[in-house]
Length: 401
Image (tube, rainbow, N blue to C red; front, side, top):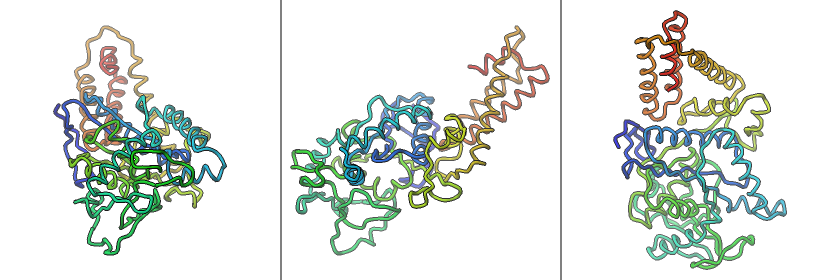
């Protein structure tokens, strides 16, 4: 299947023509939420650009096998559950349910099955054993670490300068670290023993998988070792996705994903959302302010996914107005009753041009804004024809198609 879709590939830093490994089929991995806390608007922006990607690939005729995952076992989740004196599932279960509800409100298509870190422990342990056998990983006390110096090309997604790597061996035991920083040292794969009371008995012993092995485990278990596109937020470009590449490719010896996409942050009045600033915005907040889920979805997808999006009341109201205007034009044009008059050549040409404009802009790295604005301009031309009496019911039928 030939495609004119071009995507800005983080791996190469270039806009590249997309070609799937298998004719007519796309395997797509999209990083899911960590379910120790509820998803905010910034998270949903990432899930929405991935949703747009899936829908557009399907529009082009691809069969998309998409995976999104839940990270339900990690340091932060365990600590939060202990602070509340509840079991881990009591913490993550309600968060997952809220995610399903809000994803539905925002029109996000989700796979029928969403794997969890807790349901992929067997695969995590199996991968770690393979890495130990290949000597990419090693045991230190009860834990298992991955040595990035053993993997040729480590940090290639980010473009990490390996000349900065320290001569003295360093190990990083936490699942995650805050901020856009690199841990120049070995990263943990397995928390050995019965620490924090969360553990499994596996082929490599008792313990739990670290965050760094969880995505590779879920991906390889459900999509395989070779996919077409991997997506996530810009924060995943620091450590996380390069760790995933290193783990999967160290086991398979082949390219894991030829295309990588990363979406930028949502800012709030020009500032990054954070707990310390107290400016985290949830979907519920915007709905309480009177914005419908459709308005929120449009706002989060209208700006290009690789550009930071500034959330303000003014910007929300402005984007809502654009959507209302377009939908009203569509309503007026498609409500025209068939009158037996022949289709207008001018109107037919405009309608045909709308789909061409849509494809051209979406093929350019998912330019939703360009596609929307182009369609809106063509609809204005059709409204002018309607005002002059040229637009007919036959034209309305073509537009509805």
